Amino acid sequence: MSGSGEVAVFIGEALARYGFGQGHPFGPDRMDAFWNEARRRGLDRRVTVGAPEAAAEEDLRRFHTAGYIERVRAQSRSGFGFLDAGDTPAFRGVFEAASCVVGTTLAALSALIEGRCRAAFVPIAGLHHARRDAAAGFCVFNDCGVAIEVLRAVHGVRRVAYVDIDAHHGDGVFYAFEDDPDVVIADLHEDGRYLYPGTGAASETGRGAARGTKLNLPLAPGADDTAFAAAWRRAEAFVRAARPEFVIFQCGADGLAGDPITHLAYTPAAHARAARDLAALARDCGARGVLGLGGGGYDRANLAAAWCAVLEAWIGD
Image (cartoon, rainbow, N blue to C red; front, side):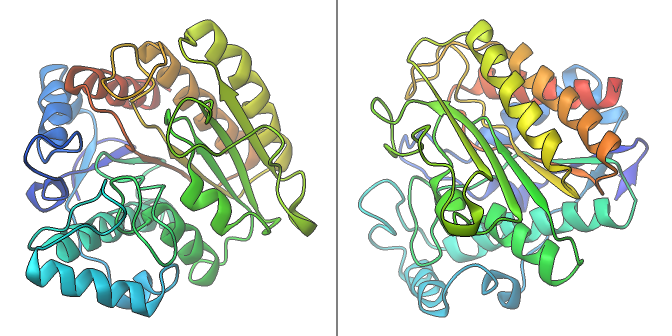
């Protein structure tokens, strides 16, 4: 890591390789769209910069099945077909690119746990649709899920809060930990009746011993900053009451007005508010850090503005 600042950004060419070509919404240009705007605003001079890292297979296996990992590796060699029903195409090197997303998320997590920063952000990360045994919705490996497993198995963190404001419900995380009472989830998203993956109803609050530890807040198409603020107040109070030891913030930018594949109407102020509140919450609860993961966002100007708003909130805080 280089530079100065209590906020770290992990960025580099290897991370940008996670993207799909031929006009796919999740293209490899997304990282540069963000970082060029961050540099234009001078944010690069106010943060510590970390480099991408590859994940060890041992860490991938903490969340994903061995059979699925091998399938990704095989399709990465051939570059043929899809890794799911049609949203997530294979390409040569997809295994290495997806592994780099996970490894970089874990590098940011380690920087927080070791006290080298108080907040960290990875733009090409937050791949919250991938399941333990399958890809889904542009997501090959679920770095959020791996991070939760590593926090508990390696770092002894018991109670983790996962907060997701991506326009799409974070189903890969939600259902993987639906029956785990120590993973507190607050997920604000466009109502699944109108948007992929069609899940995340308000009635889904966890199963068994975990009932009541999950909060889904579906929003109607066209929901703006006012609607976000009303839902956010509930989410922030819910997470604060849980007193988490670590906070993961999936701050997908596809809820901003004008995104080509969603129907919400936030401005970057929504992301700034959530980032600022989560930093204060983590500090008040004695949590060991806030890890920001870029998630979705398919209008390049929007994702740059939203993610820069997250950084500016953390730097200013």
